[in-house]
Image (cartoon, rainbow, N blue to C red; front, side, top):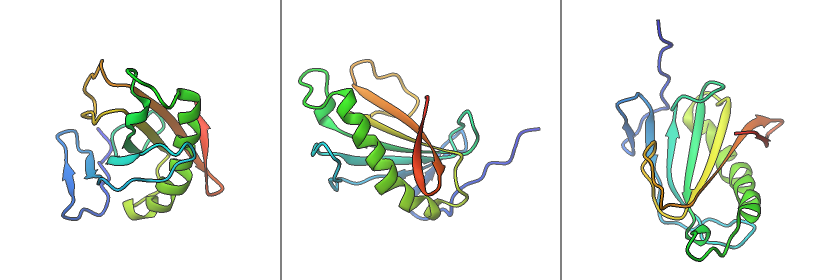
Length: 140
C-alpha cells in the first residue's frame, strides 16, 4: 500500500503532475541574494518524493552561473542558496500546508524541466532541514 499524496491548498496557479506532485510556476521578479546576481523563481515543486519524506523544491534561474562565462562560482552560489532558503522559502512554507521534512534549493543558468537531463545546463543544488526557524544544510 502506498502512502496518500498530500497536496498543498490548490489554487488556479498550481498544476498537478502525473506523479502526483504539484507545481507552482514562478515569475520574472528578480530576488536579492548576497552575491548580487540576478535570480528569479522558476517554480516550486510540492511533494516530489525526497529521501526524508515531504520535500519542497524551490527552483531558481540564475544566468550568472553559466559554464560558458561564470560570473558566480559554486562557493559564492552556496551563500545565495542559503539566503534563498532562509529569506524566500521559509516564509512561504506555511502557504503550502504541512511543514516539509526537507527544502531543496536549486539554481540553474537556464530553465530546466524537473526530472529531465540537461547536460548543457549549469545546475547547483543544496538540501536543508528546518530547525529553530532556520535552514540547516544537509548533504544532498
